[in-house]
Length: 198
View 1 (tube, rainbow, N blue to C red):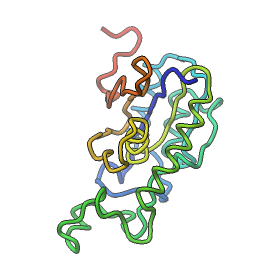
View 2: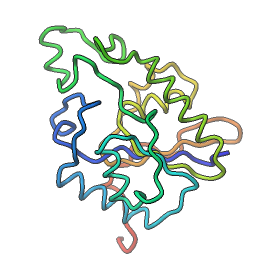
View 3: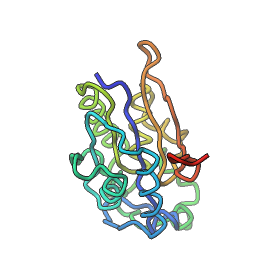
View 4: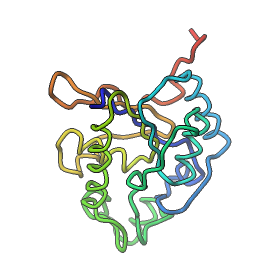
């Protein structure tokens, strides 16, 4: 059984920087995003994981590669970001021009995935991680990792709204005795001390 599941949100992209909802649009990291992914790798300093999984999308794969795990990572389509349907590329203020009270967690997205579908994918990832002996690393996206966390804690998927995640951040899920818990949450790469730093 996995001791801990480590969650790594991808580095910055132009759309994450602007607040645009990004799912199937396959963006690369910005120069800052690439730098943060490399810094993440320096902080991890070659730490070994029993298994490493990444979303198939470029921004997650690039983060994984620049952090030093590209050669061992397996692509897991279940780590794909929530498909935002018609709201792809739009920010919350853009959407609220037409739907003033819109809330992603409550209202969902037209012609995209329902939150329950994202939760089902997340539970599949968790089930797979629990079959691994040792620590597991997941490189993915903000909303899918938040929903995965809510599922880990046996909460309803919309509880994910309570778990903010920065780009290029580190979080981890584990156990306190037999209880599933959050062991680390949303430590941004800028706050990580790399080997040799004081």
